[in-house]
Length: 79
Image (cartoon, rainbow, N blue to C red):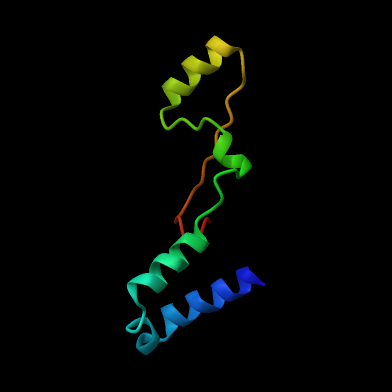
């Protein structure tokens, strides 16, 4: 139910210009806090590396595989 309310608020903010002009600082901060992912999400515990060379070096030291997440195309379309 909370998620639906958040999506409804976001839709209103994006598609109702009059409503977005009335958003207060306090309302924005509240909405921002509600949309942030929880600190204990499992994907946040993964030691992500940006550099492939760093990941390769660490994987070789720890004798672990490397998981590469790659996309092709426009980031919003993920074609």
